[in-house]
Amino acid sequence: TKPKEPELPLFFGWFLLPEEEERIKCATMDFLKTLDTLEAFKEHISEFTGEAEKEVDLEQYFQNPLHLHCTTKFCDYGKAEGAKEYAELQVVKESLAKSDELSVTALIVTPRIFGARVALTETQMKLWPEGEDKEGVAPALLPSVEALPMGSRAHVTLGCSAGVEAVQTGLDLLEILALQKEGKEGTQVEMDLGTLSYLSEGRWFLTLREPITADTTFSSFSD
Ligand code: 2AM
Image 1 (cartoon, protein in one colour):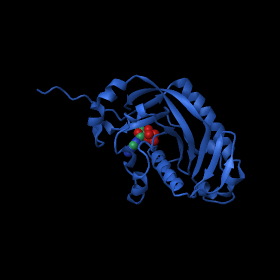
Image 2 (spheres, protein in one colour):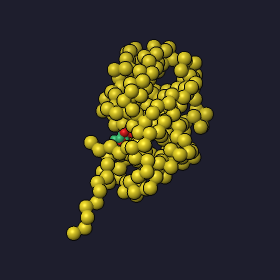
Image 3 (tube, protein in one colour):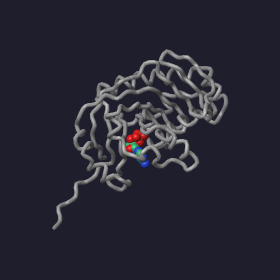
Image 4 (tube, helix red, strand yellow):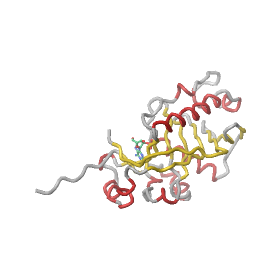
């Protein structure tokens, strides 16, 4: 009989250390608390509530994911394309259980998700699967996504609104980056953490003045 193949995980990624997770959650929650009090945000409130006069408490609006992480490869226990090949890469095997520092350069809020954009280093890019940026992207958005630098989709999902799956964060991030590249940025507001811009349809992007770094461990995850 053939030896049993090792099972593939749900996904691989960088997982924030517990104390880092708390620090990032606090810092980003403070941003949410401020965002929903801004006049600029209130002007577009109906994009979150469906009604013009209704208020929204963004802290309640988004549900926290269990463990904060930046997904590198979604394997779906081997069902996702390229899962096995990724798990077998030398660089993946060598990186497992190793510490690494992630750099968060922006925060994004849409009616669907709350997330943090991660700027990958050259070394971290070696763990970013080729073609992963365009996975599940709508055909209409593909040309713009292909024009973005590799790794543009890297992020940490910080929260999802009711009924929304975390995979949406990467898709919304790409859409925002594509709009920015076309120069479609609207209102800009200076905040303590950085510059906030509005990109239509309830999309907000905060460019951090100083990146937020977080210590992580590269690991696989299975439910
Ligand atoms: P996330 O990386 O935006 O958080 C388990 O579902 C994890 O894999 C989540 O972290 C999720 O999104 C990510 N994920 C789920 N489905 C995915 C997909 N089709 N492509 C890429 N990542 C996915």
